[in-house]
Image (cartoon, rainbow over all chains, first blue to last red; front, side, top):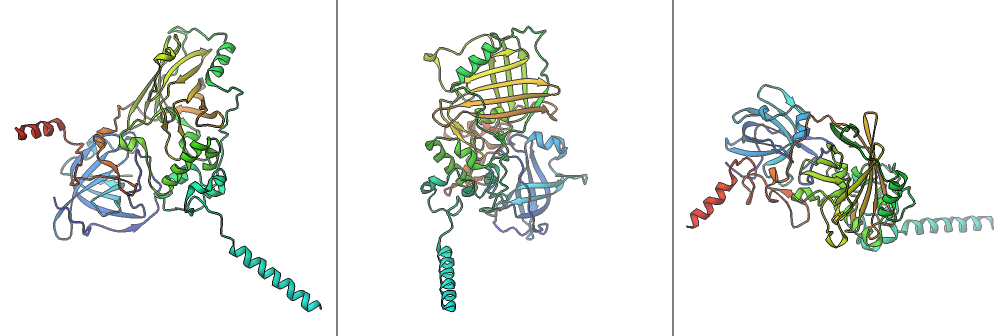
Length: 123
Length: 349
């Protein structure tokens, strides 16, 4: 895993948007809700637990280096309401996630949508 | 002469305009140099720019710091009842119910299923921060303004973020809720999504003797049935904070709740007594409707936070979280976290 602080993957697209916050057990002040980036990569693990579900995705940056991203989702009850179950993502799946990234540039963010290996998108 | 008078009038008008312009705009929560000096304005909705409690909490996340709020203020939070203390309230209602209704398993009402709490100001929506502030004693009003200023600036302190219990107020207002009715006891279960909270309401006994009482996260509850309505008295509630730009309470807070099934809803209400924190008893309605949740999930904060390590407060007071690779990161996907602990000891040996 490479943790260089440059976020320059070929798959990143920046967009400015205004999003309503989702129910959370902790503050979302650490996320930049004015930005949305898109990442395409490989699922390494899927932590299906309360208070927040996490999807871990390895993404290649433009230098070909693998960067591991922590994608924070909502709680189990909310995710089930959106059709996301433990079986939805498996290690090795190729997924595209859209996130509000951490403000300080570390490789994490709050998800806004995920497109699974079967092409289905969950918001 | 007429010209001179006109010129004088103009001069006075300009002077008045300049004087008005020279007057600094009154400080707001967002512009004040020291909120502690603004006590006279803490109950003025303009001080918060007419933001609701929830709008203050979400201000940073929604990128609208210091902007005007909706001015929504739809709740009456002062208790409509004449009682000065919760036990007086409880005993009056019990006397009205002629001591209470004795139910058997066969006669208990049907409250089966999962319920969602709605239409209450305990969710911080549609209530002005000034309305909350006005209900609090000077000491707790100061605590409150400190809290809402921090929330507006993104310095949130939510108990659950640090794997601490949500406490009594969020326990009665989060969803889903489940009621297990037995002749001598009601079990109230709430999945707050960071913890599964359980309250036991005994309907066949009094509170424990005063010498044995102690503050508890969800207090100690007793109750009686008034026909098919459940009345609950709770004391020994531990001092805590409802967060989300609501209020703090003291160890003196006690509560009266009343719940009754009406059609396909449970209509509830709660009255809070706290002579230390509140100027007058507070009141909230709790309308419970059928939950969409299929079943309860046992929840613990530590499932993904670890033992309060992944969420932390930075030196500037803003809450942050650790991601893989950060020092001290808790790996929630490790199926045997104790193995790493054992390995540390083995390595030392």
